[in-house]
Image 1 (cartoon, helix red, strand yellow):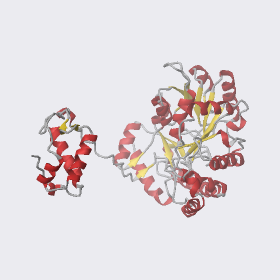
Image 2 (cartoon, helix red, strand yellow):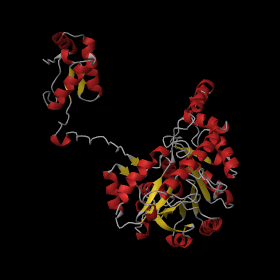
Image 3 (cartoon, one colour):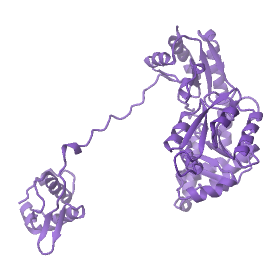
Image 4 (cartoon, one colour):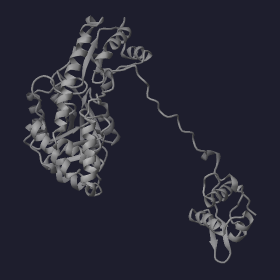
Length: 468
């Protein structure tokens, strides 16, 4: 007769503990295949529990296939493979613990302390009280209509882009949109027959990584002083190109109108598509904002995309892309089965944040703050003890700049020195798909998280790292 220490069940329901005990005996071979289990009444009397408890355990065992029943005969043990040593669960690796850097100049963090949290909370309460029914309705696969209208209005007012809300697709951040674009544009049915993507080199590594994980052929194209090199683009054989003409990351280049026109002529000539990644273009501190490539495209060859990771916070996984009319129907037919990946509440609140003018007010405050912060950081570098050994490249835009160091040390040696002092540095060479000696000793300085009060400590640490 089956006997188990029911007093050791802890907080488990009695039937579940009994089920687990019998299952363990079956898996261990203590109850061999074909053996008949005691009747429900006999086992209940033996263990001094109710018949209903035994019945619950037996029913669960039968549902999972550990036992089977024969009419008028009872329950019998099923044939189950015994666990082997090879099947022993592999221990999980220890959880990742991100280093606690004393100074991090590599991560493109933004200052979230000035975000109008009170306004966002108030809008959230309004949505919860006024839009309760709408919150529970399915969201259109391209995103909430009210949000797409607000985005279209914002693009028209501040970027000169006359687009319809129907052209806008909302998604959970840039990487997700890259995945959609890889599927939308890669029309080949066999390897080597699909769209060839050109990407900037050096450039944002995640773009290459995402496209290649999608099995899309991805070819790096070098930059010159005006941006993506047209001759190299022609030579690459690409039929789509992903670029950031308004402010390239990490070089900071701004593509002039002549090169933009060349890119559009390339697209018309080759039947290609341009993906305009408008990364951090909102933060331009000198002159007027640069018109988007999409706004001067008469041929419907440009896909525009942007996110709120730099303007609000990286934790807001929300981005959008604007499809040209020639690709809109293709998107709906090919990818329209995907559900929108952004929660309805976030979309409703952001729509109100945009239409109420709060987003533009926030941008104005942050432009002022970052302009002042950038000035202080640049001044700190220009007056530091190693100022005669550095050259700064910046275009008066964005939240980063390049700093070239006159040193005999390798980038790896500088990185090791920095990490030993709790400092994280990023190097231009890390962003290059094709190695180039010209990129050596050039740091990518992301300054947005560097407050003025930390500048003296930062300069002192860098002086130690950069010493010859």
